[in-house]
Every structure is written in structure tokens, then in C-alpha cells.
Amino acid sequence: MARVWMFGNDVNTDQIVPGRYAPYMLKSEAELANYPFVEARPDFAPNVQPGDVLVAGSNFGCGSSREYAPLALKMVQVGAIIAPLFARIFFRNALNLGIPCFTADLTKTLHDGQQVELDLERCMIMTEDGTHLELPPPSSFLREVWAAGGIVPYYRTYGRFPGE
Amino acid sequence: MGLTLAEQILSHAARQTVRAGEVVTVQVDLAMMHDSLSPGIIKVLHDELGAERVWDCERVAVVIDHVAPASNVQTAGHQQTVRRWVHEQGITHFFDVGRGISHQVLVEEGLAQPGMVITGSDSHSTAYGCVGAFGTGMGTTDIALVVATGKTWMRVPETVLVRAHGRFYPGVSAKDLALKVARLIRAEGATYAAVEWHGVDFLSIGDRMTLATLSIEVGGKAGLIPPTGPAVEGLHLPNWLGVQEGASYQQVVEVNLDMLEPQVSCPHHVDNVVDVSELGRVAVDVVYLGTCTNGRYEDLAAAARILKGRKLAPGMRMIVVPASSEVLQRAIADGSLSILLAAGATIGTPGCGACIGRHMGVLAPGEVCVFTGNRNFRGRMGSPDAAIYLASPEVRRPPH
View 1 (spheres, chains in turn brown, red):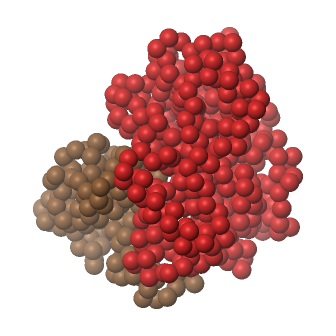
View 2: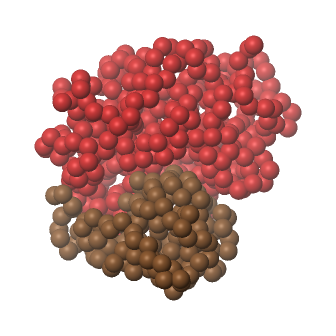
């Protein structure tokens, strides 16, 4: 089972990882794993478990191009992020790192702390009471990039970009 | 059917006519990387892509601006790595500590030109739209792939058209227009889209950069000002680039500049905008004048005109960080800088300064900052308990 971590609208990259906690400023990149939502939600990093699901409102990840924001979420092994709208650069960075992002609004359906099961293959969330919530299936390109483990392995495998 | 500026530029870069919604691979004209993400980009290039050389050492620009000069041993070490790599690669366009903010520098150096596709490791790379280039921000991995291959993939964006009518009143400027648009269409209003700004032919390159940089704050993938008007006469304009009849826009936003008063973006979201006259009394601890959005010569000169012969209120600080060394030189040459210093302001090294909350003016809990920059997110400039108000350098209540 995975825990739902609920966030509001317009979660920006300064909330995900403030600029002061960039790997650039740290002794080692590994430290970054301690800092997702370090100020916006201090209980997140110490308690998040591999596979946990972030459910957020609209415009998730707006702001900076800092890839270390999604990288911090990858380091704590977030299973997926579900939001009705993702900011463009964040979505691209998350895709490049192989973090599944689903465009759907589950903020009214799920609640913070809820235990769910995430089925990436079937694009489905199962709640404890047996409810099945369908997630919009990603395009074949997104799936291929996730399957490859990110855009770099994708490029190395196929020797091209999508649409090329 | 006509094409939007974004469609024209991406069609040129893709060597085929493309329209909004298509996914294409495009040739990149220029890749910008700054000190904050360069160590990661170099790591991806070497460790993951096995790329020995950049695709074109004259099409990669490297700028030390995010922490300039270095603030601690870590950043100093990373900058050392970047300098060595730049030297090894033979990169010609390298701008070290003090030259200024990447976007400002690339425009001053004439590296950004109309019709180019420019990708930068910084979200405000939309800035290059000030000269009619398709500038867009990307993260570490995307920029590493561009630097290795000279190409990137893109979904051709729809376009949100902002059509300005009339002229600004004195004391009202491009910043107020951009904040007004954020107020109207909100922070997500142009997500995945390009923003095209029409009716602004009278604006300087600097004012155009204010509009272009703030395009990302409504989610824009690019912010394009048509390269027409007196300010761009010296630039090389490709014959295939220009506003076309019948181009299709996702949304049209009309703004009457004659009716516009100074706008203020209140904590902690850029689209939390009010007319300055609607704002109650706010006690200010620090005024921060700088950034790629409003740290230009015109901005320093405007502040100097207001502060001439005056002093900052007791207990208030003013930090001025010019966007570039050229800006600083001009402000020295015409006496603006002396006026600011005499008024009690202090001057920082040209660069990003405290915009990212790392050094040179980080805010304490409870402090209130009036900031000429582009983001007022909680914690952006330091303490999450500080409050940031975004405004133009000339912001003040209109006389009633």
C-alpha cells in the first residue's frame, strides 16, 4: 500500500526544494533526499515511503527549471504524482527522470494520509474500500520513456527523440 | 491560415511547417547554461551520455550568475569545475562572475537574435523573446541532451495573445502590464502555451525583456514580442518572421494601457495582484532593485530620478544589483549610481543576487521586501516567514 500525500494548488518548485537546498549549495547531492518540502511540509521527508503517491491541485511544480525538485522526489522514490495540471518544465523534468505524472484531479476523491494501491500498468488507483479510480493513460511516448527509466536511457536505446 | 510566431520559429527549426499540438525535434541555435545547473549538466554529459565534446562550442553559452561570486566552498568548487570544463571544451561564450545575468548578457552580446531557438537551464529563458527569439527554460537533463546533440524535442505550443492598446501613463511600465496579465489569466493561464505580446512596438528591448521573463509566471513556454519597432532596428530580422494574418490563438487578452495603474503582486503568489491604490499601508524593510526582469539601466535610472536629493526612510535598506556589468557602467557614467548611493542604497555584484534566496540580501523571518523581480513565492528570497511584494522600480500611489 502507498500513502497519499495531499497538496494544494500552485505548488511551486521553491516549496518542493528551496534554492538554498540545491545540490549546488550542499556538500553532496545525496543530502538532497532530506529536503523535499523541507519548509512547506517538514513531516514529508522523514515519513515518505517508496511508492507513496502525491496528489495535488492545479499547476503543480510551477516556477523554476530546477531539476533537483523532481530529483529530490525521485530520491525518496515517490511512486507517482497526480494533478489536474502540471507546470511545463516540471512535467518535462519529471518525465526525463522517469517519475510517472498523471493529469487528473483526485483532490476531492482522495484524502491526505489515505492508503491506496497504485497500478502503473493498468493506470489505476485502488482504495481500501475497493474503489477503482482510473487514471488517464499516458501517451505511448510517455510510457516508453518511463519504461526506459528516463529520457537519457530512452535516447541511448532509440538514438533519437520522439517525433524525430 | 497564418502561423503564430512560435509556429514560425519552430517550423524553421524543424525544417517543415508545424502547428500547435505537433511534437517535433528541432535544431537548437543556442544553449545557455548557468552555474547553478552546470555541474549537473556536465555530470549527465559525462556519466550518462558519454559525450566527450559539446555539439558546437560556439553555440553553448555558459554564465556564472546564480551565485556570483561564490558564497561558500561548495559553490566555489562547482564554479571551478565549470571553468575547467569550459576551457577543455573550447567554449567561446563564457561569462564569469560579475558580467551579469545570463539573459541580459546574451542579449547585450548580440548572441540572442530574432527567429532563433534558444534553450536555457533557467526558467526565465523566455527572456530571449525580447528580440523575437523562441527562448524556453529546461532542466539539467534536457540541457545536457541539447548540449550533446544540438537538438531537442518539443510540443509546438498554442499561443495566448496579449494585445495592448494605448500608452502607459508616466510611472506605469511593462512590469505593470505583465502583472496585470497575471492577474487576468492567473499563474496557470498560459501553461504549455507561448505568450505573444502585441501593441508594444514602442517599448525598449529592456521593457520587452520584462514582458518576456514574466511570461513564465503565467506558465508560458515562451514569451514572444514581435521584432518590430525602433528598439530592434539594429537586429538581423529573418524575412520569414513576423506577425501573420489569420494566425490562430488559444486566447486573446486585451489590456488598455491608458487605464492601467501601477500593479503590485502580493505574497505569496505572482498572480495575487492588486492596483497599488487598493493596497493598504505596508511597512517595508528592504527594497531590492535587480534581476533579469527589472535590473536594467532604465530601472536604475528610474529609481535615481525618484531618489535624487532624498534619503531612504530610517531603518529601511535598499539593495541594488545591476543585471549586468554594462548596466552598472551606464549607471556609473550618468551619475545614477551616485544618486542611489547618496540616498543610502548599496550595490551588489551584477548577477542574480538574492532572487533565489542564496546570498546578497536573504530575508529574515517577518521582513517585508518590495522586489522588482519576478517571483514572490514563500521562501523564495530566504525565510518562509518573509513577505515579498513584486512591483516596478517606479511603483507608488497615484495622486488623487
